[in-house]
Image (cartoon, rainbow, N blue to C red; front, side, top):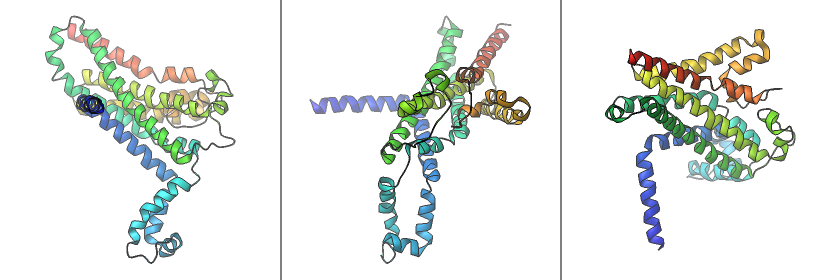
Length: 300
């Protein structure tokens, strides 16, 4: 019986990986970046560098006179992971801070993948589809959804990793502003772990979906993969620059222009979460406009 279920599970995993190889690797890359960056924020790389370059430091750690002293780095890292005073909140916040840079870039890769599919497989499908517009939007949404799920799964695995190495330790006077205007000021302190799940849903589910949707739409409208990749990123980083550049003149309103605000784990006073989410949904609106314009051009 166990062997039977093992075969079923093995076949499911194999088929799932075969059908979603691209998205699985996006998830792996995202998790890899999150873990490596969190180690950087926790000074692990400093400890490793000092271990290999400072003999006195190695001696204090008990590996100074051993012939196999380089191998001592592994038990040292393990001891650091299980005994160091790692904080859950600060590690999640600073460990995901790099997401404001790499998430939009990786999400835009979905457009390249969709571009290749659109100009190959889809050409053989579209002529049999009665509702062309509906089918195209559905396919774009499915690809964007898979991309978003790939990021969110990576975040959940990172969340579990941080929770385990930190033993879930929390700071005494920590606090965030995002979502609290909806959930209430006491929600963060009363449900800290749930808060970071919801926060992750915005940063690693909602935002990747938005930019993957835009990128896949550009795959339909643009003439090359390079244009697809560049235009999606130009929008994100261009609006980020505009947001920073207009801060002195527009004040807090510039936060709603800047898409990196929602990704940066920053704390802002009196932030309106609904307005922030609405403004960050603009790329989806742009996508529908692009699809409408393209459709009209094809009809002409």
